[in-house]
Image (cartoon, rainbow, N blue to C red; front, side, top):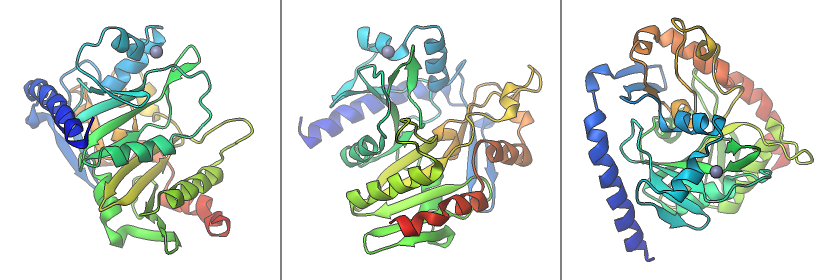
Length: 308
Ligand SMILES: [Zn+2]
């Protein structure tokens, strides 16, 4: 397929998806919290659960969502290398696609950075988002990514703001910085050179505790987008998947699963009562549990200069 065919195909998928989404929009239930450097949006999703939560439930029931989708496609999908691209039906973002590996992989040792960069090159109008783990079914997994319309997440603004960048390393090829914010620790790599981005990414993984011999990767959320051929890669190292509020009993529970989209600044609320439970402070507390602070991240990354 030529580039224009791709664009046409993708846009037709977007339109098909947007028509469905319009019925679900209820702006009166949306909220926004402004912290000094970051804005977090809360959007009500009129669905029992978001798509990613549904995925986990399907795996728990040993009824693989992706395999079922491949067997009986409920909608039109695009093929790209070993991946299929499908519109995400339950999402607060109208321009949202899932990209998933058609095959189950039994061994997920290799990093996803190569594919993340490749997708960003192919879909320049999109932001590529990786949750940091794959959907596992009986020890086998489908690698999957999100493709979101540019500027769907506030993390892109934080990374674009030069005043917020504390540079950890700089060379002719580009720079690595930490974004100054009180909510969660964010690392940013910016460069025109793909090889340099990969090199810096691997050094970050090592400092975060990658064990090559055990095949273990650190838990990170990754965001990648291109602006004028410059690779922008934001990384949020994670401590745990969800904060304690997620595991509380019924009335006290806050049903927010902290995936990469939530960490990037957009939270889907499926339970209306959660809107009242969330304050600026509660949200800050939840983010502090699932990620590192700016100061902590600075300490972890202290050795980066000597390795590059
Ligand atoms: Zn499967």
